[in-house]
Image (cartoon, rainbow, N blue to C red; front, side, top):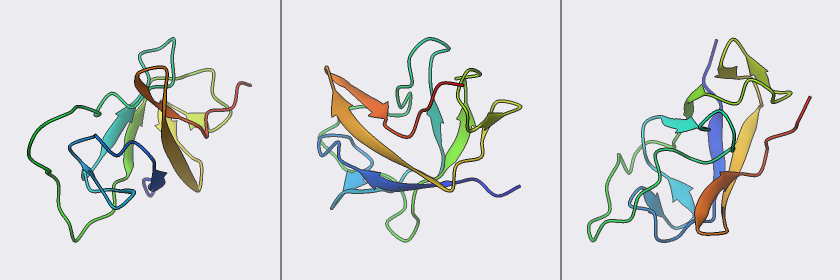
Length: 94
């Protein structure tokens, strides 16, 4: 199983976002009730691996169509800022 890429991240103030790309090696999505990027945080220094594109390491949203065994099976995800949070826009309820 290959981890899906964070195809687009529109959360410019995230420490792992540079030029609309996520550079965290792996993110976690969800808190079991909301499809948020749990890896999101604001920091004065940008981090991650600039040579890597972020991937979804785990997904706590068991009710998502793309979730199989708490792992994301979408071909890629989009993360965007919604209501003061970084949300997975690819989340689709079963």
